[in-house]
Length: 124
Image (cartoon, rainbow, N blue to C red; front, side, top):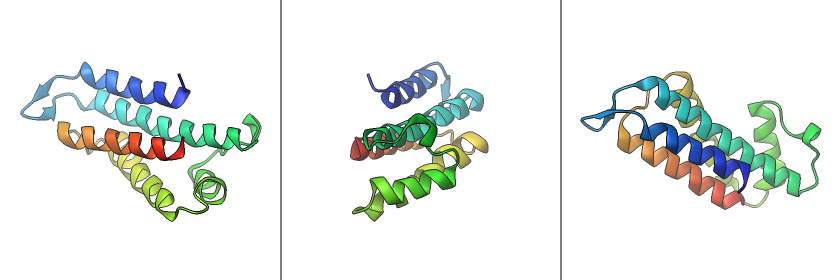
């Protein structure tokens, strides 16, 4: 199993433990953890694509800006939509979901994890 898929599955497992009240996760802390794990799945997907292109582990991006540049230069050369999707997922998963804890509606969380999987499938 690819490491990126493992991360995404871990995010889903975390959410299974969270109580739900009126379509809202009752405990935001594990939801934030799930979002952080899903974001790492996105980064691992990009890492896997770069490694396939001949990058060494030392050459992999170390910042979100470096991920943007690598995605644009090596992965989405003919598909500008991928970079826009990455930006949306960065904002949703990392900033709103993980960093600020602003997303805890069960349907919204499900939709963002589905969007992450769709993005990952496009890169694999």
